[in-house]
Length: 370
Image (tube, rainbow, N blue to C red):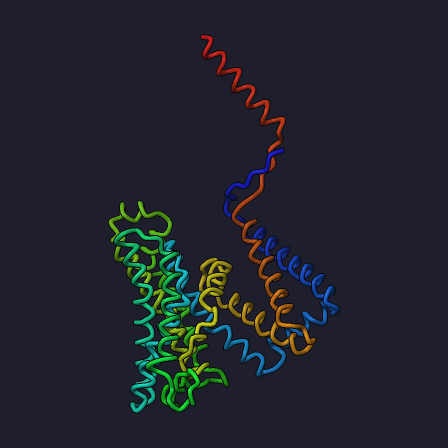
């Protein structure tokens, strides 16, 4: 018996729903067994995770606050992924966006609040866009590996913030502690319904990116290039311009996340500003099939998983490592289901394979004899 993995044909909608449902059930079952081994009732833990995410107005707000950066970053990543440009550098682009926004916040806080906030957004978008534009230029010019370049640039961005935090931007009033000064009120995003307006920005971007990808010429070019570079060239598309535009948009959206996090969540700039959002957003983009509307749902689920995981640590005195394992097991099962959506396992009987090979050998011998 020989086992082969081959590319599957496009799954029907019903099959996708069935596979994903089975993945969720498997996640609940496996995670439930783990919860039993640490001495807790799985049903109670699952109920508490939901309660910790949406059990009160405060918890719901916290879940949405966690979902906002995940959603916006996933939207930015999706633009690059649509043309098969593997942008693994959203983490660095978020950091550089936060850096640009912080520069405005720390040096121009005397200006009117609307001007400060708009300037912070624009500079953050430009800084994040440039940070993605660099590997995009290298890809377009010399066909470099964008995965490696974007990933390495994450560390450059991080070390740059560390340098600022311990050096030129260190707050003199922090009594020696390596910290950048907090923003003034003029640099803090306002709130709507108790949540910073980042959630409104996120929803607007969902509509904008959906329309851009599906109903504009540039979006169409990005999709065509992602499907086939040769087709794009044959159609007369400017490949280099497509790469540079898509990477700048991708990085610019991630840079906007840096502004939102620095202004509305941290109220300052620090080396923890990205917090792994750039990497988690990659999973969200893939699970949603690079579809902007679906990213809203997936980002909320991821945020609720994080918020619920934090809640059960207190409710059940579960150590953080155990809570992380619960989250990881759920993600493993859900992500694993993608394999069965894109590939299928084929079992070939050894006897059949051997007979086929024998027949070919006999045919070859007859030809040689003739």
